[in-house]
Image (tube, rainbow over the protein chains, first blue to last red):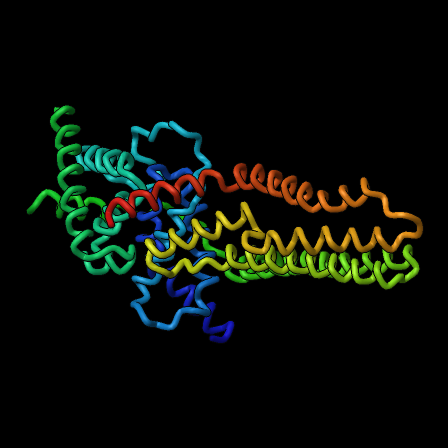
Amino acid sequence: MTHHERERLFLEIFQGRRSSLTRLCYGFLGSSGEVEDLVQEIMTNVWNSLPSFRGESAVTTWVYRIAVNTALVYRKKLKRGEELPDIPDKSMGAHHDLEQQERLAALRRAIAVLPDQERLIVTLLLEGLSYKEIAEITGLTVNYVGVKISRIKQTLEQRIQEVTHGAV
Amino acid sequence: MAPFEELQELWQSQPAPLISQLDVHGMAEQLRRFGRRQTWINLFKLIFVPYTLVRLMKAFHWAPLAMCGAALLYIGLFLYLVVDWRNQIGLSRLDFSAPSVEFVRVAHQRLRHQLNPMRRFFWVFVVTIGGGFNLILLSRPGPPRILSHVWATALPFFAYVLGERIRRIRCRRECGAVLEKLESLLKAMENQA
């Protein structure tokens, strides 16, 4: 792969998947404070891994693998026990509907209390990836991903319902 | 609409926060500079070791026993540098595009290697360094001094233990959190199996 091709592919990946990668980081970190750092780290690893990309898997799967693995070894600079912001971050854009905002905040909070691996799985699912794709990214079996997801879904829906009903 | 699909829609509808444009050229150059610096540090070590040994030989007037000792010392130190260099490269070239389960296993293993770099080469290292020192001491004129030989034999042990301690402290400070995280992930994965 020439340097020019590497740069072109890198920019294509960055521009095409910036939003979904950022949301993945946001879901994993639970706060926007370090999202930019994590995205930068992911893109650094994408850049470093590009010469070894042989197209054996789809670009999306490949990029998500890098993103998930980078997130797993990412050193969070936030202090332990630091609370998540109650009010959705302004940088996440204007969600004018207050109810939607609350639901989104509840979803984020429900995701934040899940263990690392489950947090990443659910974020991938929320991004619209199939069980098979998630299994390819994580290296788990499709059956196991299915079992895990149905458990996570139940937990999330229950927590969000609790928050929503609690608010009403 | 099923509740989870609603959540999916809600999640995807949130616009991503603005991330400043990446400077591809600058980033690539920065990474290359870091790699070059590490290579220079390791090359310096490789050159510094024989230079010191040559100076030592000069001090011993190129006595055959001292030269054999220096050769042993060089083998031991060269082995150490190569193994350590290989460990560093292994850690810096983690395959991030591998499936997570495999990635976590390899990353954990390579991080653990940082704590005890010599592993199976430990005795080769101790014997070559200790033997080398003893041969150099034997080449000194006059009767052999037991105490110096005891010191020369014990030195590589002490040096290694001290180096390992320093490494552990540094490693705990720099990547203790990551190691902990990887260990808990591995445990969770083992439970799945």
